[in-house]
Length: 115
Image (cartoon, rainbow, N blue to C red; front, side, top):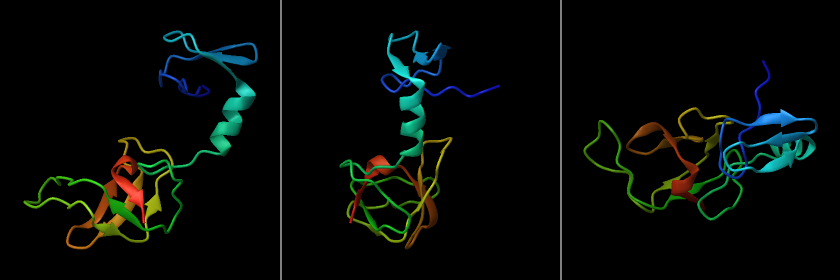
C-alpha cells in the first residue's frame, strides 16, 4: 500500500487522495500531489533558527539537555562537530553525532543552531 504524506498544516496522518489532490479531513487543507512530490525532493532538516543543516556541519546546543544515564546534562553552548543527518527519524531525533564526554548521541534539530 502506498504511504500518503502527512498534512503540511496540521501533520495529520489521515490524508486521502481526491483525483490529483491530497485532502486532510481534520483541518480541511487541500494540496496538489505535484507540490507534495516537489516538497519531498527538497526536504531538509533545519536548525532552531530555520537555517538548513547539511552533513558535516558544526552546531551549537541552545539549551541544557538532560541525558538518561548521566548525572550531568549537555550544557547550553556545547559545540558539536561533524553532524550526520537522519532522513526519516521515528523518534524525532534527526541528528546523529558524537559529543565529547558523552559519546554517540542523537539530537533534535530544534535544540541546536548552526555554528
